[in-house]
Length: 340
Image (cartoon, rainbow, N blue to C red; front, side, top):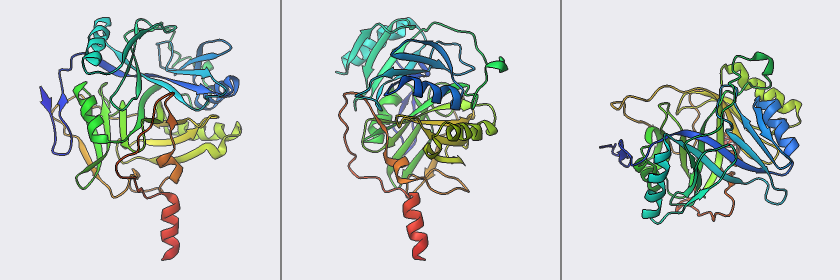
């Protein structure tokens, strides 16, 4: 069974195996203590476990062991090892292993701390993915207010990645059951696709640009004021210039947001949550744009670096798109305004 619109590739509503949600991300960092302090003090994540080379963190509302893994790598800092998705059952992992192998894509069993059986795979552009069905658990701390710090980040919500061809990669994830909530197009060109598995409007956003690369990962907060708290704590910790975009409001999704750069340049978004997208009769929303700006009604465009800078994936070659994006950056906007 599939569904489609005129701009989007088909979606398989009964995929071979069941990916349930975005789960975790593994980043390389140059100074583990400094990065740990950023995510604990500014975002409010809690440490599940740590040693001299690795720190495992989770949001206050998360019961599973980790949603963010910081791995010390002084020479290779600033890269992403993998983005992780959960599958529903162990048997989904076995099906996924065969599914990727049958399509000539990498699929390798690995042992990862605090996780059950884990499968490393890659999508057609080389984005390294990590699939698991189970993790160890820890108590949720969402009502243990004495543990609250920073922005009180609740849970990991989604990733945004760059790909050299949005349509082709959207078709791949559509075959895996990822549905589209909204998308950004210019004429007949699909610029961005906002895809989901868990019944909100986003687990994976795909944007056409040089990739694969991780543009950002995002945590939810309970209240809009927590977004400002993240900015305040970034400033207190000496990362005020790393408040890269916002606070603002997106068009796609409609949520309030801010984007921060961590000590290694990884980009993390803090935002309030999405609407539901469970019902199959709801059509994806098209946003027409001559640029990649996703502001709605108010707010200035983002800096040029927000549109083009991203964390590379370790050991993965990047490919440019056929046409370089030409978004309305803040620099371009101010230049055009000064000309009038």
